[in-house]
Amino acid sequence: MNKVNALNSINFKAYGIIERKPEPDNNTNPQKLENDLKQTAALGKSQINFKGRKLNLNKKDLLFLSSLTASFGLSADYLDKAKQTLSEFLSDNDFKSMDDFAGQNYIAEQVNLADKLRTAMDMDGDDADDRLSFITDMVIERCEAGEDYFPEYIDYHETVKRKEEEEARLKEGVKSYIQRERNNDERLINTLSNTFELNNIEKNKLREIIDSFLDKYKAVSLKQFGSIDDAEIIANLTDQITKEFKLNEYDNLLISSEIIERIMSADKYIPKLNPLDRNEEISQRDKSVFLEIMNSYNIDWKTQESLYLAMKNDAYKNNYSSIWDLFNKGNKMNQFKETDTILNSLNLRSLKTDLLIDFNLALKNLDAIHEKNRAKEYEAKDRYTKQSAVICQLENRYGLSMENIEKLLDYFKTQKLDYSTANDRWKAVYDISDLLNISSKEVNEIITKINSMDEDELDEYNLKLSRLIMSKSREV
Image 1 (cartoon, rainbow, N blue to C red):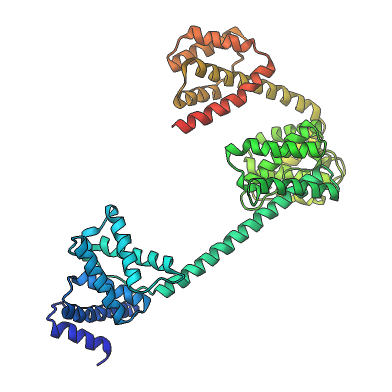
Image 2 (cartoon, rainbow, N blue to C red):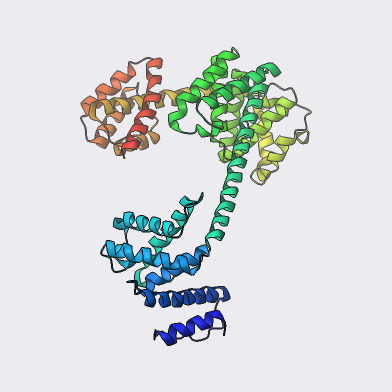
């Protein structure tokens, strides 16, 4: 008879413990069966000692102690110490069993017992805290399970090993993440250096500026500055770079846009900036005409962005000053690899011929198309700034809720009103007063006041509205 059967025999015969013998199950997991037998054997051994010492411990508490000492591979002497410790703890606290101190209200008692058991089992070494944490988890599990408690065998040393392996994987993951984001930062440095034609000395200076910036904020990469609260910090970095290399205000805007692009990138940052962007007039014209054509086909923005970037890269590589130079007479599209690849992609393959026709036609009317678009953009900008001013003025007078701000924003999306004309102004007055259930007279006063503001004063309301929306969103 092996030890397991012998102990089971003592358990059932000597002490008359009545339990139903399980029917054989061909599907029983061998590992689980072995664990269950170990627990039953340990319980039998615990009860022998229990009967000899007459300690006040119930069956489930004994099973817990057996499982606990088995997890650490401890001898019967330590099991006796653990039983004595638990018995004294229950007696001192007027508990009948560990069932009596379950739940959050007894966290202090659970931790106290775990610490006492750790001391009783001589676990005061270097990993004492880890052992205490392990014991505490087992105490909580026992308390919460109550009469349903029956543990699975858990080897503490295997648990530690798995934990160390997991920590090693996490550490490697963090290391890989940091390296990836630093590579993205370096890609940004290369992009800015190329765009603004920095020599090696200047490029190293740019790297020093960014490294010092990261050190100042104890950051490992620019990726960590993605919060709206970091906007001013990033603006300061942009200003520092602009000043260092004596760049202009438009260059400052390009740098800011590209840094934000890098920060908001997912895994791999793909630069959007190249030297062609530095010519403000041509760059804006090219983008305006490009979007005019794209929007006529309802092409999604991601595909648009990929095609525009490809055209811009091919134009730069071929020493062109404009993306439309790609379509000069005599050029074949297959000589421009990036552009040709995007045009042959699944999203654009069926539109390729039509797009090439439109691109060639646009080449002959670039300025006219751009002027038309610029007039529409100016009109839209003027309308948006006045709408922003209306919302901010209404907030100053009435204290709008986020719900009412959203109503106004939805309303303005459907309207293209010219607030300087009487008909449009009065339409807006009546619509807004009805929407918010406020005086039309006061709404008219607000719009009349806004119509008298100059462009610089109106422009300030774009930022004011953004701040207002952020502040209201936090209140919700």
